[in-house]
Image 1: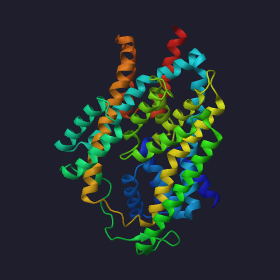
Image 2: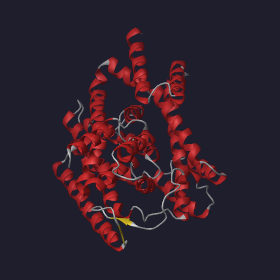
Image 3: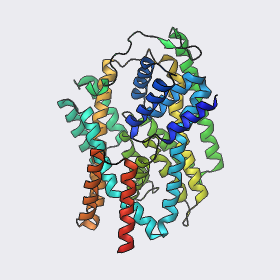
Image 4: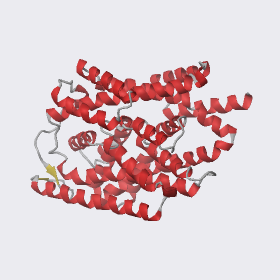
Length: 421
């Protein structure tokens, strides 16, 4: 690999703010416009594949671009460097959060971010809702899903039922087709060595063998975690939960982050209020939002001892990150040669649209829970958090400030109030 490749992917990983849309824009600028490692058609075809797969689409797209640049080694380099800066920063912030609970100003800083997180979730619901709820059927699915989730029905079950219904109901597919016009409809597979088209029989065999190899890699890593009793003995539970988190994240990270947070609270890895802190770290740092799991993994390990264990916390963060991204690498390396031959069928498109409606419901429910916790502490209205949330929302909506700036400003308000009062 050339030194320029390392620098490019590290730069993309370190500046990947703005969620999937911003990260995809950065990738397009660097790998299509500036370096021409992919042409426009192949970039769009790869993006279509990554949008259909569960997992963080921008990281998967970076992995594909690296694979086309340098095979498996290139894909591992690009996909890993896309994640590493954000994962390290989230781990450091999680450590500060855990160790700083005994320091009032540190605790106040994290508490100060909570109204801003409510605004972030509300804007995510609005942004994704505009794209996903394009028909009466989609709205009906979203309302039904919201009721089911509020009643305690497991998120995975709701997703499965919605996907099945999507095959039967005329859900508008406009949200699934944006950004995909002008793509080639000629089925073809791409050979990583020279970029030429091949028949699909060889890539299919490659996909099966690669999936088998990555399943073995997952199993070996899981066995190591089990045998070494990592993260204070919680390592295997962390690995299992966050593998499931990636595999369930059809429609983007926000589709499954609320479920992962609720599961973590139920297991005692997070306090209810720490859901705010996890989301704040995921939103305000570069890289995929699913790096929320890194924060959770650190706290899950840290809390295995009464005084807190930094070693177990670091192990938990590493395990959560590793097992959240192994499935993404497996899917891209398995399906990359088929990227131009994979097209969403009408049935798949309807299923994805229905799942998109469930995603909106999950985000809305999360936002309501966080708003109640932030705006009605102890059951009494708190006007200052409401004001901070409104100000944060306006600043983000108008483009006056980026997400990290808004989160930092909210944290500063929390520190100032604590110091003054």
